[in-house]
Each structure stands twice: as C-alpha cells, then as structure tokens.
Amino acid sequence: MHNFLGYHCSLCNKEYLPGQVTYTCSCGGNLDVVLDYDALKKKYQPDDLLCRDDSSLWRYLPLLPVTFPPAAEQTPLHLAGGTPILSLPRLAAELGLKQLWLKDESRNPTASFKDRASAIVVARAIEIKAEIVVTASTGNAGAALAGMAAAVGQKAVIFAPKSAPPAKIAQLLVFGAKVLLVDGTYDDAFDLSIKAAEEFGWYCRNTGYNPFTAEGKKTAAYEIWEGLRKQVELGLSYKLGKDTTPLTHSRLTIFVSVGDGNIISGLHKGFKDLRALGWLEQLPRIVGVQADGSAAIAHAFHAGTETIVPVQAATLADSISVDLPRDGVRAVRAARETGGTYITVSDAQILQAIAILGRYGIFAEPAGATALAGLMAARTSGWLEADAPVLVLNTGSGLKDVRAAMQAVASAPIIEPTLQAVKREL
Image (cartoon, rainbow, N blue to C red; front, side, top):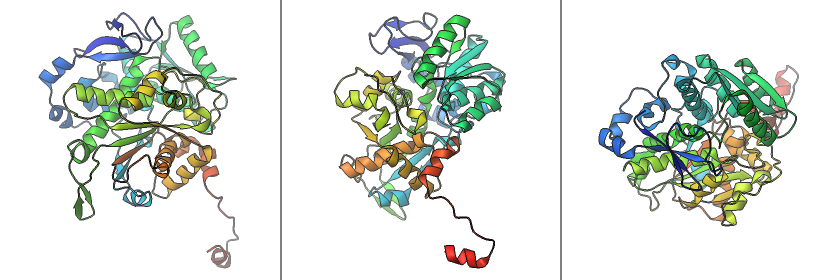
C-alpha cells in the first residue's frame, strides 16, 4: 500500500498516519484518505490503468488504499463496479438536451451503488484481521456488505430499521448476515451500530463514518472519467447520429441522489484524485438531489453554510431518508466547489421519474430515479443549459422496492382468456 499515506480531517485539517485512527478525527470531522500523488504520478500514466483487462473497480487498484484480497478472486466482491454508461438520446430529446447518459449502478452484484464501498471496506477488514464487520443501513448498504462479506467468508452484522423494504431485508438474510431490525429510524440504527462496534470490537462500515466507504464510491468517478473523457474532458464534439455537432458547453454535469452525503462526496473525491494526478483539468459540475422530506444537506447548501441541521425525514425513497446526514459537510462542498447546486423534489416527482426511466429500459428504485427527477426540475427552472452534457446516476435496482415501483405505474387489467377481452383492452 505504498500509495496510502494516511488521513486528513475535513474539518480541522489535522493529519494522521494510517495506524493512528480508524474512523473519525478527534474533533468529530470525517477523514479523507490521503494518497501519495507524487509517487503515483511518477509511476503511472492513465493508460497504465485503462489497458487492464479487469473491468471492475479493481482496475484502479493503484489509486485505492487497500490491497486486493486473493480470496476474492472471481467472487462477487471481485465484480463490484465496472457498471455501464448508457446513452439515452430519446430521453435527451424529450428533455431538450443535446446529450444525456445514465450510469446504471443496478448492475452491481447486489444491485446497488453500495457494493463499491462494501468491497473496499471488506478488503480493509481482511487486512486488519477484523472478525466481524457491522453496519447500519436502510437496506442497500447492508445488502452490499452482506453480499461482499459472504463472498469471502467474512462475518457481518446488519442493523436496519424495521421499515426497510422487504426485498432488501430478504437480501440481508439470504446472504447469511446477522440481521437486527431496529424499532426506530435509520439514524437510531446508525447510533446503535456504533455503540455495538465499540462494545464488541467489531469493524464498523457505516457511511460517512468509515473513511474507506468514500474510497469505494470514488471509483464511479474514475469510470465516468474513463468512459466519457474523449467526449467531455477533452472538449471534443459529440456524435449525434451521423452528424458531429460541436457543443458550446462541454463541461459534464452529474446529477446524483443524496441521503447521508457519502456518494456525492465520494464522487467529488474521485475527481479530485484525477485532478491531483494531472489527468483531469476541470471537475464536472456535481448536482445533489434530495427528497423534499429529507433535505438537510440541500437546506445547508442554500443557506450558504456547512452547518447541517437535522430534519425528521419522510420520503418513500428509503435509501436517502436520513434525519442527520453523516457526511453532510463534504456533500455540501461537492456541489459548491464544482459549481453545482442542490435540488429538492417531491415523492410524486420521484415516482414519475421511475415511470419515465422504465420507458427507456431502466428499472430504478426511488433513490435511483431521484437523480432524473432533479434533472427534470433543473431543466424546468432554467438552471441547466440545453447544450450541457449530462449524466444521471441510477444508484439501485427497482427490484429493491417493488411496492414503490407499483405506485409509479397503472395496475395491469385482469381479463378473461378470450380474444374479445384482448380487443376490448386494446
């Protein structure tokens, strides 16, 4: 791990060596992992990573603060990341955009973005010889940890609110994790999991608490850079059908749903890594999208502060339903430092976005569709230019929350088994 120098506090700027701290700074601030950029620049050029056969997030191993666990070879943990970037020209035209992409994180082994963080945390747990890894989750992070842990025989304990969607709880149980359903909110589960980790000596994966979670999530930024660098980063023109049309605004704008704030801060960290290496000139604009009923970070951003005031979260998008975001400060900075913004959307807008994505062959859970809902709101308000190249992040599969999916569409009619009945419906 020659590239892992230690940690830097995001609040007080205190620095630590790798073995001096495990989770957060003594001031309570979240820690950024520090890489040896000088050594990396001397040893690697982009093609050294991009020519690798491995299509998973592990193709970027030199930029990660862990070693790849040999026991993970050809397991689901080895398959985390490497998700496709899909072009959506018909939806782009519908929204009045020149170019629109969607990065589909539902293709991860446990069907959500959270596999990235869990793969890295489990690798770290193996390095430090942790017997048990624990996390709090509304479902996706827990399923990711349970799946990645099962892949290598690591024990896992998951605290989840009893209100989590049944499909997500089923994943936890099938993967063999010890599941404890908390009679309370996600935040109650979060606090209890930290107390349990301290009491029993478990290694805690919690989002916005363990610094290695952002290191997993940053790999999506690497993949976006790799997949779109010729069209966006280098300022080239876009191919629209057979024509090549130059765009006046070649800076990529990324829309991502935000709950705890760790995905958006992880993306920001990934792009900052690339800029520090001299491989990226300008960071994409990053736009955070929150549900109206769970918008603590958006409130702070628009108030011009980094003070995160808790809310009483209420949204059907359970993956982003958070009272007190644990990575709020870095999440505010991700938008502010890239020229992005925060947008809030209603549950009705989220359900509409689920149905719209479905018409283009993408089945997203509510949190995944929230990014598109934010994009649509940005177009309606005039914030987003028509010639801006845009990428939205679908963070999870619609199969995670079938109940919400059914709310997004009309129910199917039940008919008699006759051709006349078919004709009546047509």
